[in-house]
Image (tube, rainbow, N blue to C red; front, side):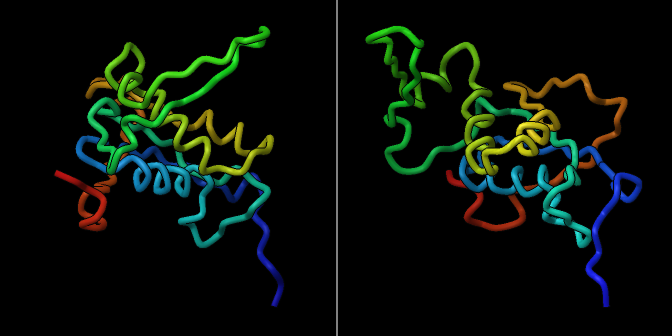
Length: 152
């Protein structure tokens, strides 16, 4: 028996839409990361971009458990003394709340060229509107997958 290795002709990409309203951030990010990598497929090949195109809507309504809303997120401007921080709660209430979901998914992927290519297949929107109706995305109900995926 030979090991199956996918070729570019074997890759079948779908469009998936996920509603993040009321879903716990970490659980959402791990499900999206698995979909982006293609690990949910039986023909998964680690060195190929086999994942689906994922659309996440309602990113501003994602749930964060525990005291993580107060957790600071740091970045550096590149200048001396240029460390800056903002809490996760401030980012969610700010101008670009979709960055919280994007960063969580990015950190669940390996840090290599392939995962940077796979991140281009992720589209995150703060509200319910998205411009991808022509692709006819299939709905993936994350809330019903496990009761721990949602918090009230």
